[in-house]
Image 1: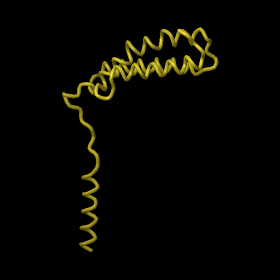
Image 2: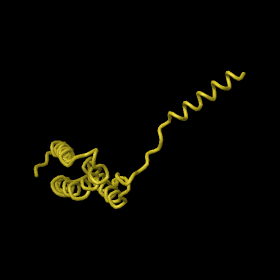
Image 3: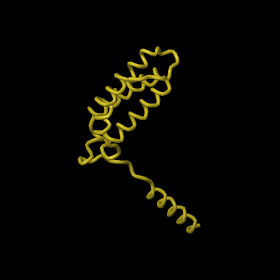
Length: 117
């Protein structure tokens, strides 16, 4: 009986000791504690999602699609979304990588909707 109890106790300790600890922010990691950048990112992300919803909708007029693809979406992405994301996750993203992602998205919608800027 003592062996069984000891084995169960040992397994319980091993399992709880091996669980991942919650991440803690440190002063050397300012991106995770920057509420201004987080708010800017969330606001910009919502705007970009609205643009993408309009581009995916069959009911959006071609003139509005052109306005979104040629002016609104790239401007929002470059002036708000990208800087905020780089502040929040500077080690995960680079400016070049984000600009490439923007080009890929714009090219997809331009081909899909036959739009030339």
